[in-house]
Length: 307
Image 1 (tube, rainbow, N blue to C red):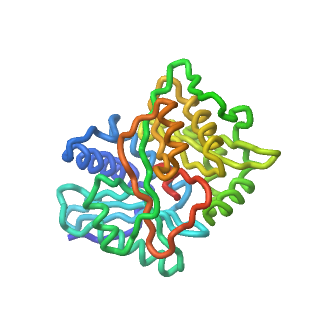
Image 2: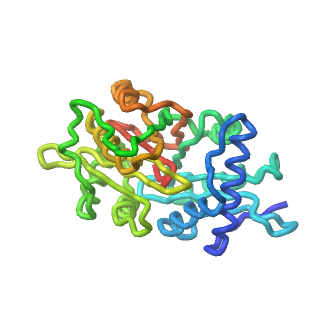
Image 3: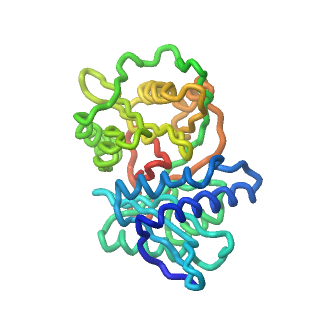
């Protein structure tokens, strides 16, 4: 019925349409609003950014009957792990085993490289949860998706946040950010931070916070029609992470960015409510094989999905 192979750069438009239609259809069929409210063209963000970061790391399922792409999944090999990115399957082929076949191939790639696999998926999507748990993925963190309405004039702030220690990130900070990630959760993804800080496509903004001349937190964000999110982020202190989140939110006056806040940090959650954050969904971080030990604060995101 279908064959799996590596996507080609010329598949970008068809991939965008598949991501847009299948994601929106799932949410609407379960009584929720669309995730992607603009045209399908907006979802070219995914194949374009991931081809920049990880050329040739998207598997597609192609219908043998008519050649259409009916499933896709991006994966992101890093020094310490492989991250499973956005997965989509055409609703017309529900139950055909597309997602299972894509997942199995990516697990095989990870096992060949002797690396664990990580992902972040919606807690509302029990079909997705079952897909992963049947293959021995297990949750290790819960995140509250919170949206924030940033005033047109910006200026979101809380009293006593150390905002004076926040500054824009530079390429020279990449090594220190990597050191911090390795200390907090033994994770390395330097090229992601370099890519976001360089911002060649014009979507990104990154900040760091320092204490006694040392970087103790970093936060990125993206402002694109298909994704306006705060993260990824990493840090040692709830108040410092809150200051970074506020700094990134204020990059998007008049907009409604979303951030994934770790539910096991009630201090940070309380500060996010005080900033006006409202819950809209829950996500689970899951791992296959080795589970990361987090000794600090880690915030994932959906672009890039390299947590």
